[in-house]
Length: 164
Image 1 (cartoon, rainbow, N blue to C red):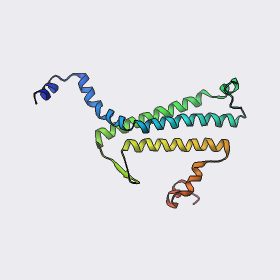
Image 2 (image 1 turned 90 degrees about the vertical axis):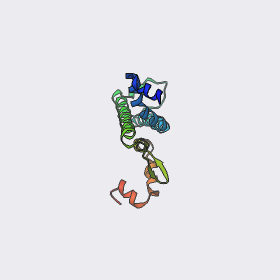
Image 3 (image 1 turned 180 degrees about the horizontal axis):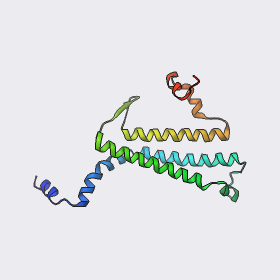
Image 4 (image 1 turned 30 degrees about the vertical axis):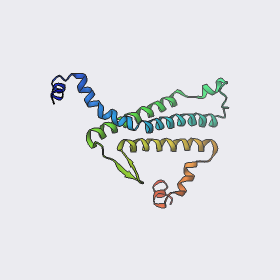
């Protein structure tokens, strides 16, 4: 008990910051695999977007030719960076909100337990997957994710397609 009182009696600014940041860090550590997967999907979306641009401009995908690098537009790369830091800020906001407001509350979906932060990351990841599918469709004419929609229940299909 004495050391507990001594800790709070001699509390410094660094200790205050560490006490405030520790719940956020603990949640961040638990969602690190999901966040890593999201950033991998962002990178794949960037690559498929570059491939889509090359296909639309009839440029070969040869990394030894300068024409490939000239076709990559800096404003499109900036859009990818903007999207990445917007996702990052949204995830950090969810982590702070979850750690300070909800605590360890979790949601059960399809027999799996998710936190709010994990659900936010999954939403961002699903957006990226859809974007990858659109890029692949522009190049090959086929979108695997649209084909997979046929296997979903009709009520969920109606959410994505107004013609049903």
